[in-house]
Image (cartoon, helix red, strand yellow):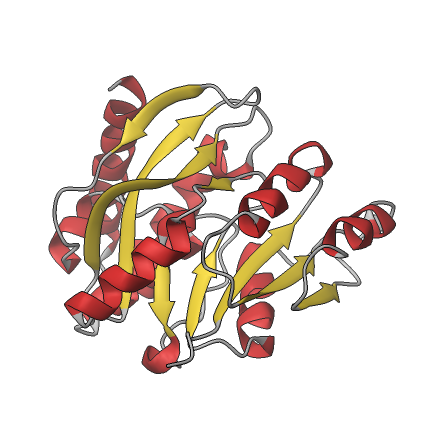
Length: 250
């Protein structure tokens, strides 16, 4: 039986020093039937030729060049709309996958008959040193996710049969969190796989580390997208912020 195609979505914004490692971690996958949908999301086009040279090594790919910076949510949605795979996987342009990530996770999903899975992951610094490991021990329910986003984007694999629910809301940060909540609220099973199969890079200028944007978008997420009242939205942001602080210490 032919192995299903996996569409790998990457958005790029000024990560030139890391992107080669990211692409190589994909090329080194033991699972080979994949395509890369690469979205260049920067109005500064000086890195385009560099990216094209890196992508020469990839057999199946699409390079999408945004005329201006649209943000990760819109860029990922464009990539999803251009993808052909039965499964979707996401990785940021400074993260790294273990070489058996796709193979192990796909087998797990087929065995468990689930459309959405996520895994444990490592946190690394700019020199690839492992700082800590985030383990997942249970499946994500809506109530659990409201308290904390413990699903790492680069660990997720989705069967596209749950479309059109897969599209990311238009937030600057927390866009992945908003999607996980939406899927859980609609009754989709979000299944955990407790193996470390990827590494998330903690960089100094990472947008996902910007406290102001995260707090602002967390409020929008709860108040606008999850339709919580004002007081409950503020309370939820405080709980989420507390959980974030605890995670950073342990």
